[in-house]
Length: 106
Length: 177
Image 1 (cartoon, rainbow over the protein chains, first blue to last red):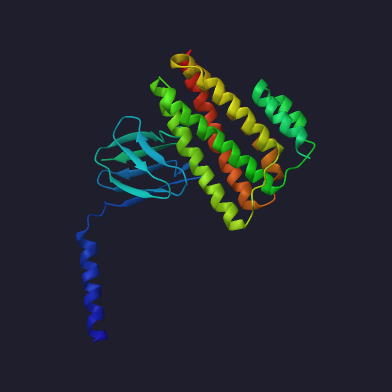
Image 2 (image 1 turned 60 degrees about the vertical axis):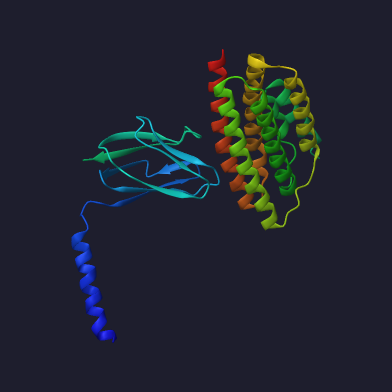
């Protein structure tokens, strides 16, 4: 069975890679020890941000322009899909010293 | 002997004089079980103050500030409890903790007599002074004295978050004027 199966799996994987849109990426942004990293990152419309809170504190990722406001309970993560292009400064509402920038390309 | 610097912390909280705190603190080193107790007590004090503020505060900003204090200090104290359990350390009551608690219950009683804008102002003003004193103690005494690396690291995280609280309190205090 094995020698027959492996090539078919390989074909499926190749097909899957071809079908997925090339630019839809998942980008991780981590909050740890009251620091957002990376502090500045570029993404594209359609990309998913995986927000990871490694702290024991609750944080938020709140866009200054109101585009997003994600609440992250302690030690939890959340995802959001970017819908609008632009350079967005965001911060944590609970700890305003935590600041970062997301550059969203069309 | 913790008597000298516990008195100094109490005095610093009363007089809001970080210089005095720093000057008098240098003499003695608290042990890790004492440091854990002091840090936990300091957290409980601010949690109780925040609970009082949630009931009495009038301003939206002050209510939001109290909510932030409650959330963060409870998180730090939860972490502190988990750490002492893991390290099998029993926090040890001491003169500094006692002085802090005594000061705090007096302050709670004092603030309890106030209401409305007068309460808001007095609560936030005390939060500025209190965080300043606690941050000073963390920076100059508690963090340098801590032996255990994990305890030291937790205190450092605490300092970072409490410095943010101090700024926040200063900001709210300025807005209330």
